[in-house]
Image 1 (cartoon, rainbow, N blue to C red):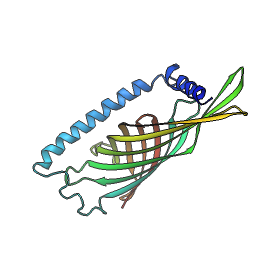
Image 2 (cartoon, helix red, strand yellow):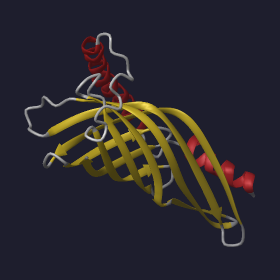
Image 3 (cartoon, rainbow, N blue to C red):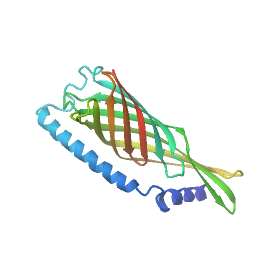
Length: 219
């Protein structure tokens, strides 16, 4: 039964037509936007940093350069209903490299599982999935828009994701899991309400796509 459910999951998530046909286009567009923002930002970083190393000044006034984010999101795990997620982010502004460059660490947890129901001659089967994730990112932002306090940004880094799948049909159940390291990409925009508080909207793509809205707090 375990193998059967795993095959069913693979068929539903990977072999069947993509439930979100725009996923590949969205990922390509996200990659392009992230590349444009980050390459521009990193070029400026290289020019302004001159002989400074990445670690020079990293711990200077780190409290004043720290910020935290709390984000509520929906993760597409390939099932009919998305999982509800909560992401906590700690960030550190890398002003000694460039004023618009930051480093971030993410922790993602599932609040409510993704779910699909399938019917067959053997009855109805419910498949539920949850995801856990961690990641480290470099973030390039741009604060020269004509809209005051609105800052778009792009993220690129390495992410670890682990998904757990459970299936049951009332008389039997099975479970499986899968984990991977891979490239993490993201784009978003933050609006500052004052010097400390702000709100944001964000899209991240690792092994799975996650749409987030959340709050930003600068220490």
